[in-house]
Image 1 (cartoon, rainbow, N blue to C red):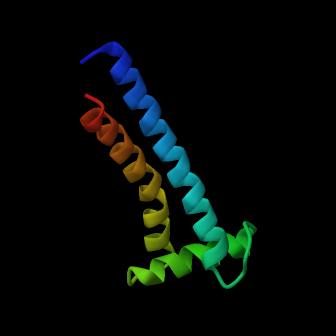
Image 2 (image 1 turned 60 degrees about the horizontal axis):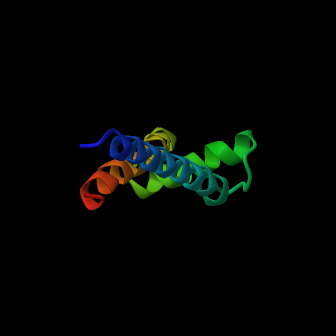
Length: 84
């Protein structure tokens, strides 16, 4: 594998993580009973996302934290696979 291809794969992974992070923040801000990114908005948003998984705020936090990582890994390996 060329060094340039590896650098581009890392850039793709980073871009995927940024997009996933932005999406996760937007989901938390919009999902709760209190809209926004204040204390009440964040806690109600995380709880609302956690309820989808059958949990509470901790389950929502785990989901929101895992989303950027998953998108970053998918973008990294997707770039490596499809850019031959």
